[in-house]
Length: 264
Image 1: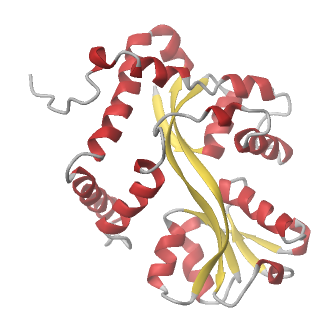
Image 2: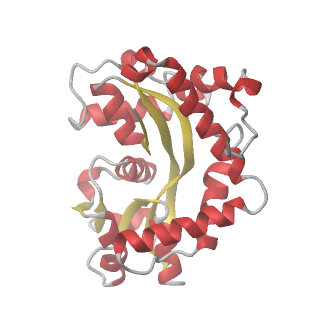
C-alpha cells in the first residue's frame, strides 16, 4: 500500500504501474569518489564502479558531461554498491559513483585517501498505491499524516539520537556484523538529508516542472530501456502528487500532527 524508495525505482514504478509519489523522505546527494589527487577530467580511460540505471549512474553521466567526457570514454564497471569501497581501496577501480551513506562510510573508513569529485542532488520518496488512494482515501490520509508526524517527532528533543541508535541496532541484527556507521553518523545524515530540508517531507513544486531533474531522470531511464518505450512523460508527471500531504496539513486538528502519545 505504501513504500519509501529512491528516485529511480520510484520513476520506474510510477511509469509502469498504478503508483503516486506523495512525499519526500530524503534530499541528499549522489557522489563520484576518487583518490584525493584525481579530478574529473582524469577519469578518461579509467575504471569507474557503477550501479547501472541508478541515480548515481545518472549523476555520473552528468559529471562526465561537465568534464566534456562521454560514457564511452570511461570504462564503466557494473558493481554491487557494497563492494565499491573495498574495490577502490584495492585499486581494482579508479573511482565509483554511489549514493549516501556509502560515500560518507568510505571516507570515514579510509580517511584522507578519497574525496568527492562531483555530487548531484538525489531524492527519495514516500509513495502510495493508486488502488489504496482510490479505494480507501482515509487510509491514504492516515499514512500521509504518519509520515508528517514521524518527521516532526524526529525534530523533537533527543528523538533523532534515539532513532539513530535503533537504526544501528537494526543494521547489525539484519547483517550479522557491526555497522560501519555510528548512530552519530546516521543522525548527521538524517539531519542534513531530511530535517534541515525546508518544507520536508513535502514534494517541491519544482519537481513537477517540465525541466525538473525528476523529468530528466525519466528521460534517462527511458533512453536506457528501464521503463517502457510507450511510457508517457505527462503520465509520470501526473503521478507526482504534492496535494496529498498538503491536504493533510490543512486538517491539523483532525490528524493530531504534533501528538506523539499513542496510548489509549
